Length: 118
Length: 107
Image (cartoon, rainbow over the protein chains, first blue to last red):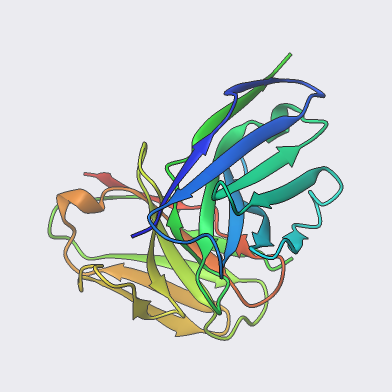
């Protein structure tokens, strides 16, 4: 059974960079796509982007200019960086595994609430 | 983007009630629809995928249906552990998008 755990700073300053790490355990990180998804009170769930274990990435067009996702196979970790953040980026951030051959997500991590504050 | 519209935004129901949540897509997504359950402090869970396929371990009181632009998630007999927020998600057209959620509350 695979487990995902998000970690990183809970508070980020306006115009700074949000940096989160997802650690995968219980199963191999290889062979899969891994996504970042966020939940905001105003906009609900929003898919941010994903990365294949080979390193190829895809992003929501609205976030593509600010987001990067990287993968570290040796540490079984997926990293999200979101630059130039504003209050609108305050959200609970989740990592999730893309179901193989489809574009839905399971399992997910518990998520981490990140607040953008001035 | 494909807009996903859920209704109602919240529903109050009693144990044993039948609850149906509707999800409407702004364009035809065939049967590329999933449903998730979110509870505060827990990892979100995939319940239904491909419109009507139950993920392993999901109780049979959950069922999904529909095609094209109109979809439903039905809980046949509400149990205490079902009080949560439910989201639909389309997986047909990039970028993948979600509904705004339906909160199922205790009446």
